[in-house]
Image 1: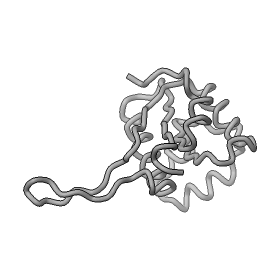
Image 2: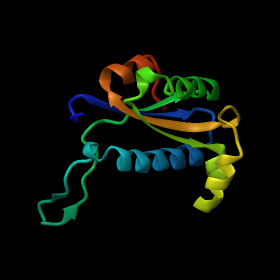
Image 3: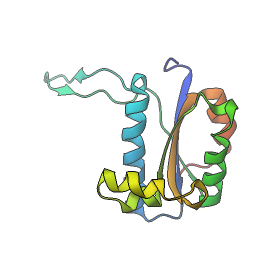
Image 4: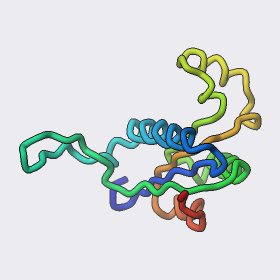
Amino acid sequence: HSVETIKCVMILDENLPLGLLANTAAILGMTLGKLVPEAVGEDVNDASGMRHRGIVEVPVPILRADRERIRDIRKTLYEPEYAGVTVADFSDVAQKCHVYEDYIQAIAEVGEGELHYYGIGLCGTKKLINKLTGSMPLLR
């Protein structure tokens, strides 16, 4: 996909405290940046000649939903129609682990239905992302 045809959004649990919201957005952003590198522009120079790393070329609205709505959307994303959508999620299980190996072990012991998603990040065609999230409010 080109940056003209893709859309990226994050959907965060509106009931999380501010620190967890910020942490969730940061983690999802890093993961989406790895998974969809074409969404990040080239490095640039300012007028002083100082270098600045590329930032996203597409807006990334931060949407809000309750835990059940996030779970429903995450479940929908497993359907074949959404196979082309890049998905990153961050859950309570992940947040409690401070070492990645602990996360690998912990997530293997928890069923998907037991996870509390703090947020999900999505990148895909504008049509599919809008179909899933078009009516959702911004996190403010």
